[in-house]
Image (cartoon, rainbow, N blue to C red; front, side, top):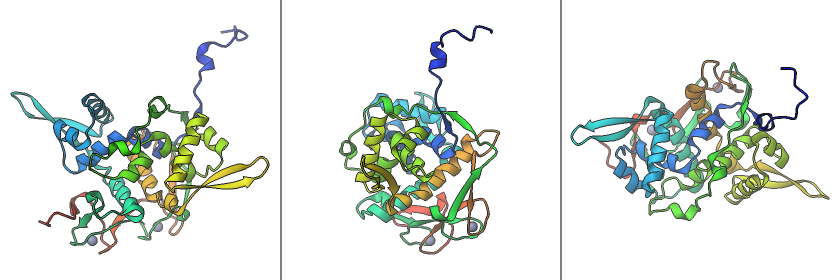
Amino acid sequence: MAQSSQTSSPETAAVPQLVQINSATRALNILGDRWSLMILYLAFQRVRRFDEFQSGIGLARSLLIDRLRRLQAVGILEKVRYQERPIREEYHLSEMGLDLYSLALMIIRWEKRWFYDPANPAHRIKHKCGKDFTPEFRCGHCGELVSPRDVYVEAGPGAGFEPAQLPRAQRRSIVPAGALNNGNPMLDRAFQVLGDRWTSHVIAAAFLGHRRFNDMQNALNVAPNILSDRLSRLVEIGVLRRELYQQRPDRWEYRLTDEGRDLYPLIAELNQWGDRWLAGERGAPLITYHRGCGQPLAPKITCDQCGDEVSAFDVTPSGVAAG
Ligand SMILES: [Zn+2]
Ligand SMILES: [Zn+2]
């Protein structure tokens, strides 16, 4: 191909920008959608049938079908036939889906710590020790509590760059926050944060150390108006704060607040899940180490009341009498 001096073709002009691979971003490309999160939340409450999902979420039939299909296509939900004549099917969490339980616990943890509402059933969970509890995020190796300051990240075997995804949210109008409260508060704050892809990508970028507008824009390959909208929203709900770092002209950077930094366990669980299910043959793109013990971080979730590890099978809604 010697004709390299020709004008560039539309294909070369449209080469997508590359972004550094990380598993949390990959996971968010699948999960960072409010409806999908609500479906998963209900699936963990053992909701399985189409009609139950529909009455639980109040979503238009076509949208619900679309989200259920997507979750099935990535392998999080499985369709199971439970009746032949007439044919009836229900949706079950696959192993990959059940493995999101740790993420669900970290969502509840964050909500309980910052937006606790005793009237919200999603905030009231009971451990097998019999007590209402808040899940804790610990290092599985040494057992210490882990905050973002206690970890560092190094490139793993799957490190590299991949084309930036165009999050669907860019092409879709945002659902106003109030429109979703069908008298069922679920996990409203966390879903505001995670349920909009760009919002969650901005948070993940903040944890990777990006603070300035241009910096974030480059890291995410996002349109400026979308980025500024999501930054203001995150400032509004208290996850980020704005700080002046230069005057004339004024320039601001965005830093995680205490509330924002406390989202770390949630991002870390997204990352772990992405490493387990989306990393492929090359392995994890980034490895997180716990400074305290020097080991790769393999998180363990514990009960703040009895100190024991928490698994999916020993949590019940608090309003329900145990066994
Ligand atoms: Zn440790
Ligand atoms: Zn306990």
